[in-house]
Image (cartoon, rainbow, N blue to C red; front, side):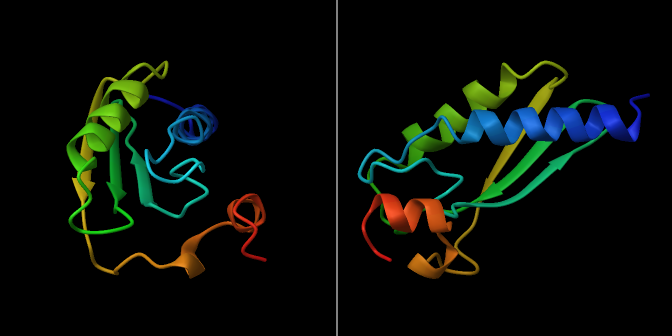
Length: 107
């Protein structure tokens, strides 16, 4: 059984991993874009990630979900990854971090 500190550390590693995955159409990582709605890491090593896309008909959807699966699976302590794609709520620019807005000159 993992301690709360170990669980938090793995969640931090997952966030850092997600910050290295970029939307193919926008030069900003998917975490700062606000595409990650929820990260739930369970003590038995399962990472449940609820995410969205900038558009429901994104042609790169499968590649992006597969990339998240593969990269998060490499995080030490992660035994299994479940990526759930949702469009509720629908993504919009207000979900982007200040960093992402600055990067895209939207501030």
